[in-house]
Figure 1 (cartoon, rainbow, N blue to C red):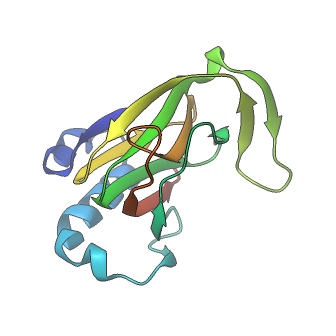
Figure 2: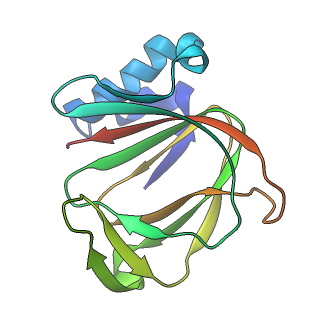
Length: 150
């Protein structure tokens, strides 16, 4: 897992060309992200972006990981907490039929992802998004979420 400010994105370019593409896309389009229409856009055969706007939700939600894609989530505006746990620390993995998604049971850490920051969840990083910052009060969020084939 990576959690950092967008201004530090270039430090992660050596991980993979597709991750570099997504991070550079954020850097190049940062000022126009909040005006993009909601929904999915295919950027390349290996990178897609989904623009989301929602109210955060209470814990718990669903723990998930992915085998084929890495998630990169950038907070355009608003803050949220995201759950994190290494794949070895959660129980009862269930592969979702026809999806690149595995669902788990258990507990994990809840990390703050502030506006202007991004988080990258690799296949070994089980995660839970859209959580209230303080555990109780909904907050408005706009986010760019990438699916990246590494």
